[in-house]
Image: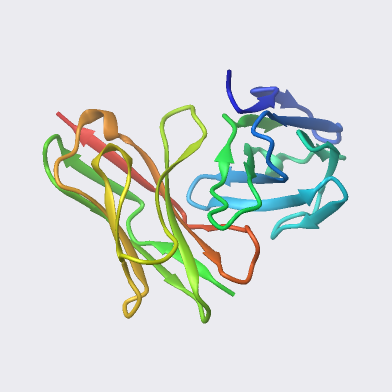
Length: 113
Length: 114
C-alpha cells in the first residue's frame, strides 16, 4: 500500500465550483504540504502544515484553503475554481528530523473548464 | 530569498551515453540540496540529497551529484543512461533557516533514445 495517497486522481470541474482534494498518509509524519505543478514552472508550494494546529501559507495560496483534519489527513480546497487552477497537484509529507526528506503522493490532475 | 535554476528544460541523449543535468541556486545562507525524479504519471521520488559532509553525493539508480559552493551548483550526473531513466528531474533547495520548505527548479525532461 502507498504511504501517501491522494483522491481523486483525476477531476474535471467547471468554473465557479467548489472542489476538495484529499491527502492521507500512513508514514506517521507531522509535516504535510500541498504543491501544484505547471509545465515549465516546476512545483510551487501552496500551503503547509507542521502539525494539526499549525497551518501556513506558501508562495501561491490565493484562491486555495486547507484543512488539517488529523495528523494523517490534509485537504486542499478550491472555493471557486477558475481555469488557471488547472494543474497537477501533489501532497507531500516529511518527518520532523534533520533530514526532513519529503515523500510525495501520486498527484491529482485537475482540469477546470 | 533563494531560487533554483535548472539550465536545460530538455536533454535528449542516446542510451549508454553519459548525462549531466545542471542546477544552480542562489542563497545568502546555508542550503540543503535535493534531486527528485518524476517518472511518467507518478509522483516525485528522492534521487539524492546533500545535507553536509562530502560534496560528492551518490543516489539511487547510479546517479550522483556534486555540491560546488563557490559556483553555487549541484549538477546531477550519470555515466551511462538507460531507457528507463527517461523522466523529469527536479532540483530543489531548502534553507537551513526555512524549516522544511523546499523551492523547486523548473524541471529538466531527460529523454533517453535507443
